[in-house]
Image (cartoon, rainbow over all chains, first blue to last red; front, side, top):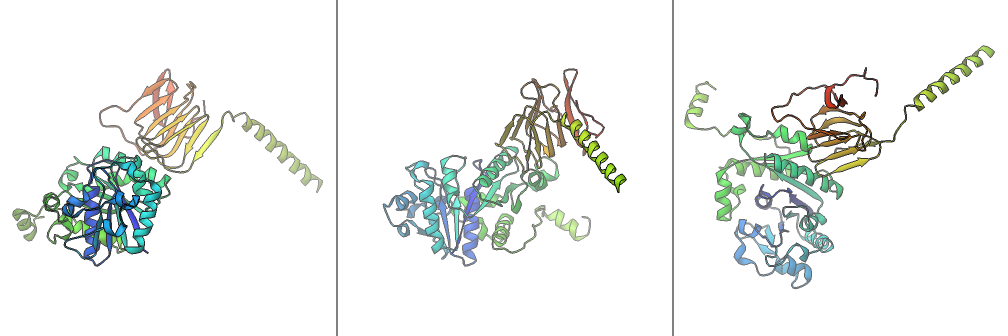
Length: 264
Length: 141
C-alpha cells in the first residue's frame, strides 16, 4: 500500500508543479513506482513540465466520471520506468471532480503505486479541497516572500483543520546572497512563523527554468545545485537523515583561489 | 486536640474570606486557546481570551475583555471590543499588525520597530494606546 502526498502552497507561482515533478522524478529515479496526479483542472501544467503533453488521450475527469478506465488515463513517462502521470482536464473546471471521487481515486492509485503525488491548484476553494481529500501527508511549498509565507500559514491552518497533521515545508527559490545582505527572509524567519518541519530548501537556479522548458526535471541534473537540493528532499521523504546542504554558490574563480590560499 | 480543631476552623474561615474577595474579581468569562492561530483563523469571544501559542499575521483575536498571548502576537487584536476602555492586551512578544482597544486603533510605526524580549502590555492612558513592559506589579484596572 502506497502513500498519497499532496503538494500545496496557497499562493500561485511558488513552484508547486516544479516541486511535484522533481520529487516524483527523483523517487522514480531511485526505482520507486510513482504516479503524479495533476489536480489543477482547467489549468493543467504538470504534463508540460514533464514533456508529456502530446501523449494525453484521457484525463482525470474521464477517469473519475467513468468515461474510461483509470488505467487508460495514466501516462508512462518517456525516460523513467517507474514514473506515471494522471493528467488534469483542460476543458473542464474544478467542480468536475468531487471530494468523494478524489478519495476513491487516491485509494485506487495507492493500491497500485508506492507514491501518489498530488499537485494542488493555487487557492483554497474546491480545487484545494479536492486535492487534499485523499491525501495521507502534505508538503507545503513557499518562497521567501511575505505574501507566500502568509498564504502558506493559511494553508497549514486549513490542512490541520482537515486532519492532515504534520505538514512538511519546502522553501523554494532562496537567494543566499540576498539573505546574507538582509534583503530576503531567511530560513529561520520563515520557520519562526510557520513552525513546521523543514523538508528542504531549493536555491534560486537558472537551471530550473532551462530544464522546465525542456520538459526534463532538474532533479536528474547531477551538476546543478537545485538538482542536489531536490535529491536531498527525495531522500528525506524516504526517511533518510540528510543535513541541509551548503548553498553558498559563490564559487567563482577568484573565490575558489582565495579559498585555496586560505584567504576565506 | 481541641486547639487543633479550632485552628482548622480558622483556616477555613480565612479561605472562605479569601474566596469571597477573589469572587469580586470575576467579572467576565475567559477562554483558553491551546494552539497557534494561523492566518485566516479568528476568535471572537464575549469575555477574555488567553492564547497558549502564537498569533500569526493574518489571524484575528476579538474580545470584549482582555487578551493575553503567551507567545508572539503578530496578528490583529481587539480588546474591549464592545467599548470597555479599561481592557488590556498582554503578550510575550507584542508585535501586532494592528492593535485595537475599545474604539481606539493603532498600528506599529512604519519605521523599523523597537524589539524587546520582555512581555509587554498595551492599554489606554488618557485616550492614547500606550505600550509598556509588563511587570507583575500591575494591579488590574
